[in-house]
Length: 368
Image 1 (tube, rainbow, N blue to C red):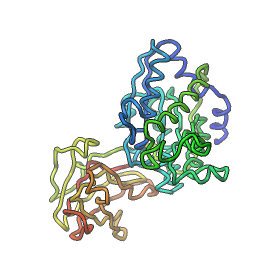
Image 2: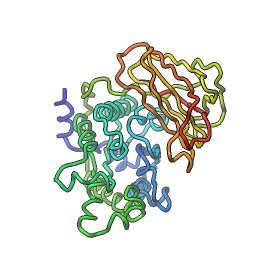
Image 3: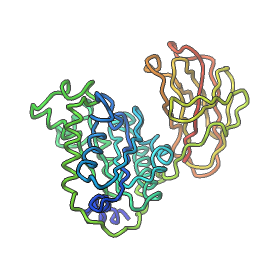
Image 4: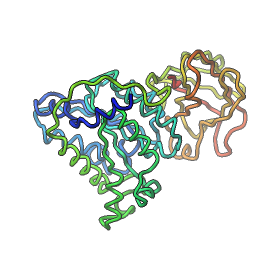
């Protein structure tokens, strides 16, 4: 079945439906799904100078008869593993016609090939199920810490993993990170003059990214719609194609309280507890389970197990918690046998040394 994806890739016209809509002056919904580089971290004004904003502006200027709507569904500090669970809520409900996927940098930190493949393929399959006519473009950004393979004529592991998925489904990709690296190699800038921290581009760095995307779109401007193709069989076992967020209020959680406060703006409310020893049980059906929770200055630690397995420890606090409160996630398992399972977790009395409390605040469970 891998040949089905290869056949799609060989056909060209990866943006045929998008370009046809634009040529006819029809509305176009463009979704941007990724991490902080897509969100616009480091830009002086993310709504104007990020690569995302510049790309949307170019589409609107080049095709003024089309109403181009932008959906910014990027969240900094998160990878494709969370993306596979939040995709429907954060992006697909807007029914995008064109989706740019950018997770290679954040997936690099996880360095987990099987999980990355399951997540990226799950995202692609979810998009196609929601809108078979949607078109998808993988975008590969870079940091100073990830470009060493380019110097050896290779690519970072996560780019290669993502490209396996892109190739299987015949999807286009743009390696803007390699273009930035080449600009620095050719003395057209430095990591200091093109980024704010060797990770997030500044306005000059985003201009390099945006120009690369613009050139890509120009090359595809005359693409024609290609015949619809059946979605091939999955590339990997158990892709996260049924990922969803399940409201934490559905858990069996005596001693916890339901709070109306949002999960740092990412989920409308949350389940909260701080008393050591307080337990929570959540039954689910699927192959994966995780937590979408709050990282705050007073966040605490938990002990968790699935189906009576040996307890393991996790913390909802990290070193950035003292600087800002944010929603984050922990994917506990994504390789379970399909069926019914039970997650049990307990608030621990001991916490991280710099944490100001033992609070655990969960917005949703990640379930596939």
